[in-house]
Image (cartoon, rainbow, N blue to C red; front, side, top):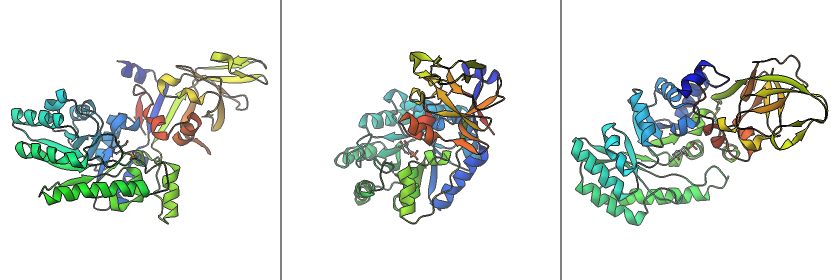
Length: 385
Ligand SMILES: Cc1ncc(COP(=O)(O)O)c(C=O)c1O
């Protein structure tokens, strides 16, 4: 309902650049060669719109999706996507039957989950496909190597559960140019693979790479790579780009997929010495023309951008004045003549020779591009352009 309303009377919208997305997929596919590519579409496809990105990924020939939750997986199924879908997050025990019914693969790191999936598979006379996640040093989800035996015994007793994959995830690959920790984790993963091999357990899919690993470490590819941020045209971090250059590798040419736009809701002039917004945190130093933009922290425009970010209006920078409100920001258009009601402004994206990137906003807000884009309110319409 709310989404329909937003579509009917859009005061802000997110544009998804089809060409850019398809280009980024090609860049990764060229880098990966024979290795399979799983598109990570969790968190509303990093804020880009789950349905829209799933459609483009289908067009690009992607046959693996990574979602966080059962709900995201079911949503893709309900929309008719037939790709292999892996739940990367936590499948609640109560969701095992739904997961099996919808042929969703589950990442497993609890015996309870495995038992629930086995029961669901028996009941439905349908296999449950699982990917065991190995703890290699992130200390998030994962099975410690000395606990793996218990999972194998349970799998042996429950042949309706198919061990399709084995996975892990890097902890410190984006934040540094030092490759010590990823290599340590890779060794731990290799040890788990040897453990399985020594017991005659064959696992068709092995995967541990994210975007940064896909860009920097071919030795971590195995036969499937899970790429998120890179497909959306954003670099995992500045360090990833620097590492790439230090290694003499040619960086991927990634193109940002998302632009975020809104309309001007009011234009007004306030005198010199006027306070702007909650808390009176900005006081004008000259007669100031303001454009009021109906976007705020509810929409994902971080409150940390108060008095620091800018938007683009008529291809020029307009500084945010005062605090970011729940649903509004005020920007200074004193030096941008001709701005009128309902003119388009760009919050993320390019206009003429100027641009504002998710990375720039993230750094102003003290966060990372991942958070900046994933927090763009899902109710805002996504338009493929
Ligand atoms: C388990 C898992 N795999 C892959 C990814 C993709 O990482 P990236 O967006 O850096 O490619 C993530 C992202 O958080 C993840 O949690």
